[in-house]
Image (cartoon, rainbow, N blue to C red; front, top):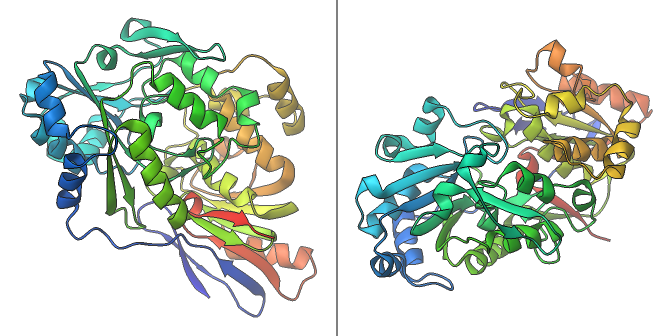
Length: 424
């Protein structure tokens, strides 16, 4: 069997001998691109869900300041299309527009990355990289019912018209991306992001893939975003070639729920068993640029690996761990992984990036993780995983170790774009 694993921009071939490997390939449904995405956008904003048409809303508000929150360079949102289409509906001067890059707690997007994300629009509008630690650029709006402070980007709060774009796909914490996640945590202050990702919430059994209803983290992002909500959102679903398949626009929850229902059908794949070995990716570029993001693909595989099994994670990680935030420091903690996880769960503090380390450790507690990447050796030593430069050889080692003539293997070529669901 010949496979192509999503890896960087080129992919990575993998050949499995059918005589030695019983491979189950799990792929999301791959709907065709919309034949006319601009027409799909126009229809969605003219007949939005739970809101007035976008052009009508803009006329009523007559905004002097418009904020458009978009995802950063690690997300494949087609903002080079969406942003100009949105602005065309608004009837305002380019000078009135501020684009806020939703970095969460991560670094800002570079000029080169902005050009890739926005195309010609990168030179038309004022662009602000959100900085979660710049208190002078944040506004405190109140607290959640569970006591967390809600700090949001000042340019967002002070705008007369607020719009958020997004891409709806399964998310390992919030059930699905998009919707209110384009505000919290994307343009929230560090204290808010830490509250949102606290250890007890990340460990909750309903904080998981593909389950927005009853998901405490999805409920919290919606509650906090409601303190200063978008007036309008434009979310899309994409196929495996990152082409627009549908547009969902309007009020945040109504539009997001509609998109989640479609994404649930496309991405959640029923599986009848667990596997001793699962090969996963991080869906290639742009999500597989660093090890922090690679945890998502590992988390997807952990759903169907046998206890004590092996996850082979294929993620380019050409931008390192990365270096910003506290991810590196937390990984470098001298305690063994089980002790570090216990300490995280026992602590009331939520250091920056702890949530990603917690998820990695939770996955590693149930399975051996082997990483195929381009990380330098110094970074490799910090990942709390084993490493390989030969996936086929690693699979053969796993087969021999188990003394099996034919090793059952599950393969997720698109990583977290496929979410396996165990069915009895």
